[in-house]
Image: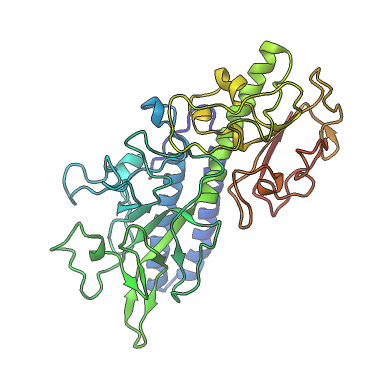
Length: 402
């Protein structure tokens, strides 16, 4: 039975996400199992897809809980482990490599199952899983990495088996991808070259699963004679779904900080202006100190103030600029703010929204709230309108209010 890393305090939202993934996985397994009886090919596929889903779940769980330990300047929830690039079968096999690549680029290798705290996973043909990670999310070994927050983007592209349909259009790029290599195809020698990605992963029609930066292709694919040319089964982790899990943790951190601030001061902090200094600046290099998006007296609608909440949050929160990507509004705070602040007509003391990753057509960092939020009832939230709504089904925004 696989062991997943336990969540520390402040990660309840992420834990719920992993539980949801497990429920989806269980339902899918039952459905496939009902179809697989008596069909060895479907049974093998079922086993492989289950292993891929377990790997995806473990990677998201591992990523969400990063940031509380390690070198202060490298604390970054959302980091994904480096692939296992150790020689196959040696003592370090199964562990993430210390450096993802010498050039700081996207990297590919085997799934680092030991680093993830789980048992080794195999596909239905007894092969270990492979894994590629976007440079935007790879584990930094030096203080040179950009922040990971709601504005972070994936970079990996995945195509359907026809080789032309892009499964990851603009805004849906992947943060990581996991491969089940299946049996060797013609030209692949896994005995002579046990550590070469090309011995396991396939290429076709300008797409190459063995190349660290791809673009990648979804198998299976056969040639005109019916011979397999790609038998890799894959599963992706989009930046959107990884950020959604991270936002649950960041929102919980923010709400706890607001609660602590209120307990000490008797009021909630004023927002930072939407156009305030540093409030639209990306953090290109995570450091122990970062210029802050600061609160301003008289401001009622804007961004979460990084300066006033810094004493109440973990260091990774301001270091990754989470305040500047969150929309924040308060009711009357002694500065003539509207007393009618509400969500769906119910009065609130504050409203806090994490916007999810940018959708196609949205540009970050921006002074337009429509570049962050999808619901028309919320996109005027910087104009002084105190009426907010619960995000709809088509939105990737997450709203919290008290």
